[in-house]
Image 1 (cartoon, rainbow, N blue to C red):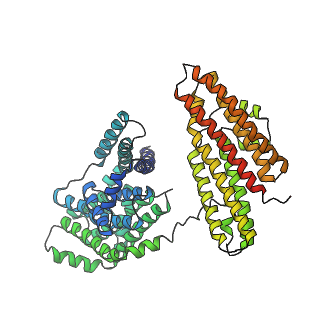
Image 2: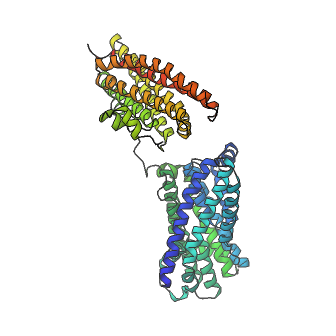
Image 3: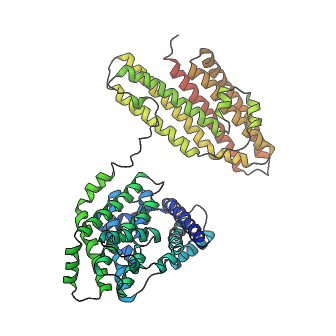
Length: 551
């Protein structure tokens, strides 16, 4: 039963730790104002400053794991480069030796749980009284995330506290020093603290349970075991977070291997630096010595290590385009055909964006051809979608198309080819304008859904009808190249102008209703202009596009 409790506590601590990592990273992004970014850039602006930041922060927090996790969070939030994050880790490896010195001299061990409670308490209370969405609130929320990381680490450590307290290192005697190193690695990985495991071996040394050579091998292993925390912190993260954790692992493992192979000379050097010192103090010196050796070995190679790390965890570049990234502009005819298809793809994205903006499934409008009145009645709830992401995707697609057109225009000089490219560029521009009109309408549509009155509901229904009707007419003309659909688009645009006059009557009713906020009248007028601009842009896109369709 006791062992089950230990594993439940360990699992809960792991959950708190991972959630704290994700939450801290998200809040750092939100709170990272100009001053904070400037401070981070200064503290980690060069490789050496990053190294010093890692060293002093670890000495302050008494945990290289926490500082490494901070670096991983900052790189995940885009506030630190991979090269400088690696330098921070190197500094943390030297900074972590401070704990061994403190234990050696005064036997003090910092209670990280108190620190976690302080961070969570201060951050949580402050965020309650601060306005939502402000940078200051996000900063205090980041404190909560930081506290959760501490609490999760402490939970994992406490779950194995009985193991750590009852662990009798003297009962495990080995002939080869490598086994002591593996023991140090295993204990540290289990209790998530190299400082705690080194404290165990210092206690064993003090009680003369094991020899100095075995204790030194144990410390080397514990130095490698501390990388487990960073690996956990990088789980599910960006490629650079994983690369940072891998660099940490490679650095500690390589340093450990060199230290283990050269343990004889290192022990002699330790004795020579401080002859006759207490073994507990001497193990702290040994810990510092081989970490300094590792940094001296690797620090000049940081640029090469960074470049090497970038070979790993590569993500295949996500292309917003479907066709043009697969062809070369050196094959103009093939490229023009791909460009033709890409603009059809852009048109489809704009159609979907517009229909989703008025809370109507594109499939129902364009494939199933349900009556518009039925669509309006069936789908009358406001959807919760990331419209900003949808619009950003469209903007990137537009940019890639226009860039490809520019590149392609230099490949052939004949008039017909250039005329085709000009037509496709103008079509793209009209589609971009149509998407922009919808984007500018999004906030207003949310306001109309919040209006609980007849006039507001009527205006919203009329607005949605215009968008759906425009998209449906555009779809037939643009995608299928139907002359009938093109003519229908022209007729509908004229009806939009008539509808504009009808809508002004609704706006008059809105203005008369005292229960409706006065700014809604202005919003209604603005939305009518945007709706008209949307339909006009689609009509102009169809006109340009049809110039290239054979009679």
